[in-house]
Image (cartoon, rainbow, N blue to C red; front, side, top):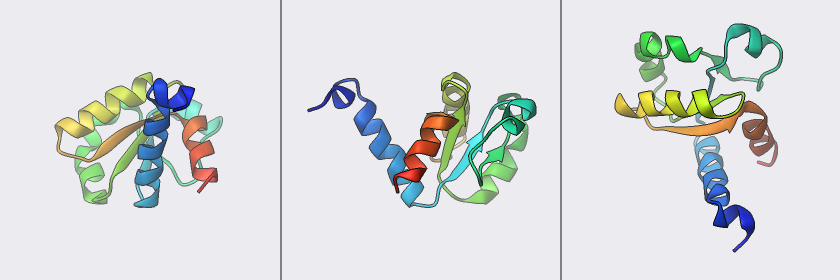
Length: 105
């Protein structure tokens, strides 16, 4: 058992990779200006404050969702909101972390 597993991060990375393998949609919940400054190719920018208003659009995707942001705080909130609406979602943390996981697959 490695340090990442001890901290619960190894399993989280495996869960995120599982979502990626299932063609999850990556939703970046940062502001548009943050998103423009750098983002994961193919991700959708839906700022956290608009997630509830975009719920029907998100539900129509009919895919698991990985949320990401700058540090993982806003994406945790977004994943929680999505789960409350019955959407399969996981907090990917920072967009850079999700990017590194996508690159390993």
